[in-house]
Length: 322
Image 1 (cartoon, one colour):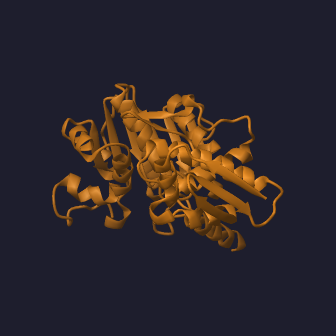
Image 2 (cartoon, rainbow, N blue to C red):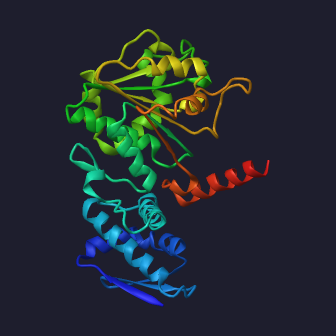
Image 3 (cartoon, rainbow, N blue to C red):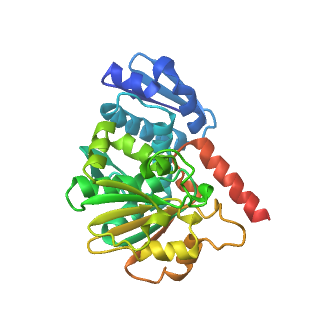
């Protein structure tokens, strides 16, 4: 079985194939087939003879990558895997769900962020509807990225006054005094994943401007006791490393017109073995509260890379055997 996709523009096809066709072997690996690039067309041959299923997946993936090539100057393996996973997840949840529905998009500084799985779509919906949302699941599922995109969209859209970023600094024992610099410089390395997400969505100059005018605030979790956070979108990252007391303290900081998003992976808890994770505890006692939303991501939602997905699945299987 074989299928061919013809591109209207050479530049479009070059972006999909990558420099010196470096993306071609990766797409072949994902599709379990062979690609032949000639002129303005790409032909796919299904080496497993799956009676057309591979051909349809090829066509759908190429159409997605062609659309992506219209918006982006470069397409790399992570972007390809995100689109591939989106197709896989879409087939799981049935054809009646359109993951590119404009109503699902998060608007950030002129860009649109679409969900790549059913659970990502649920996450976006919950962030819009609930005052407090817990996003729990393995690495690479888009928990932090979507939380940042939502928060930036709220601030840039004038719905919230500022973003507050926090996380437990377990490695430094919540004692940051030995680190050089002011408070922002001390905590910054621990919040690097949040900044990576922001820098993907906005130019660094825009982020610096938001910081300078107080629209982005970073704070160690230990420094938030006694505060009342009003008109803010608060993100607690790495929530699995909070203690029960810290989680309770954080959740009771929410003031007027504020929302909070808690992200975490309960398989990567760095607390001492005798301490109960505040995220695990909260997920146990708060699920029945109507005003609180929960979304539980799985290994099938991993969109970071094919390798990350397989690593997560391997660890899950090992944990189940123990």
